[in-house]
Image (cartoon, rainbow, N blue to C red):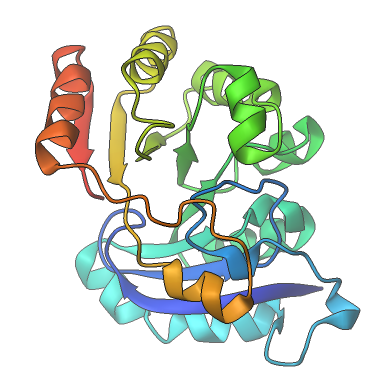
Length: 250
């Protein structure tokens, strides 16, 4: 069993609790205008991936266990991100099982745009879901991500139904996701899901601009500047006042 990994980042502190190892898995079915990991979007089959991208479960576990002392001391763990990690559902299930056998805390950072069968097969495997919610209006969601949000919202309702541990992540993209209408719609959606109480608001940044240049990819957010912190704090207050445990920036 081999997985295709684009990057492994150590000592991360923004991808779940404690000090973590973040494994960026290759491939994503969405094409968000503001994607910060454009190198992870295109999927390559295992047989076509270079040796530095292919990992067996045992090889990846060796990398994870190198950081276990830091994870244990900080109540951290490993986060599987991407791309969309659930695109490699079989490999992901195996590595999650291996982590559980070593008592390593696991999180999946997901867009939720995953076929129901794969989603249900993985639903009980991680300790935590970091679940992105971007745009509620489906027409706008298709425009800015390239896909419908119907499956995303359906899978989120499933996590709520089965009382899974979920932190909602909302990227605050100027003029797209941070509009008053969209924030209002997200708040109303989450108020219908009583088992989901935690929100991370992720301010827009331009760190990935250099990646688009190096990869010769169109940067649809070129020239867009981050919003003022005051605007982001106001959005946080809206969710906090609605009863959500809301953090800004992580």
